[in-house]
Image (cartoon, rainbow, N blue to C red; front, side):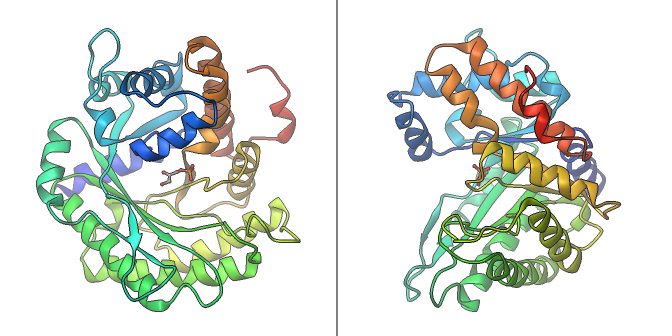
Length: 338
Ligand code: 13P
């Protein structure tokens, strides 16, 4: 393990003014996204869509890294440049999703365990050769009657820590992503209670697995009301609650925290990030690692063919989220031209 290199990459991923584009939708997930614009999910459309995002003019000013999927890391621009090489030349760090998905946890109805540890050491060697400098593993915790159980939380935290250790052994920075879902009608207080328990278990396991904290990035959910909650907490409360829990549970040695958007609207996700950064000074950088909140508008504007409109929409979201990393975003910026 090269600690200096891990720390250098992790810091670059969360540098102020920039954040991470999560473009690692599995073939099943990207099909769902394409279904929403009535587009067939062919390998060429998937390639062309990612090329549209990655070749957006000025993208390296606000995007520090891109999370790729197994298919995407092997694809090329129409001019024949492999995506990881294209991104690296721009100064954008390529990363790779390495989990193989959340599967039902036997014996625990309604709960999942993320798979993908078997053969991971060998896959990391290959991904590293293909240009990946960081990886992502997502654990999924759902809130409903009687769940999550402590057992499911601990099992997922253990898998996350085993993944992180294998990454660091191969000089790949692990993004550690324990996602507490915002589906359902739960209150923000319930989200806070569960997220705090999850982060406690995750950092216990990371310590037990001897993870070098300076060489990782945490990707958590924000503390937020369930989507179907009757009274959803306002943005200021989301920001205060999230920062409070992170201060309690995330060691200052972690260089940065890059949030997932998890089904928030694009505007909400940007506003929440900006409000949190206004609550500083904070021990870690707070940035974004959004999938849907960076891509929704761009996907619609692209529609399968319109590169220029798709890029305009993506550039706008990336720029506004870049401003949110220093607390400079305001909602009225949404109306201004991209
Ligand atoms: P969302 O921002 O759409 O939640 O996706 C981020 C991600 O990488 C989930 O694993």
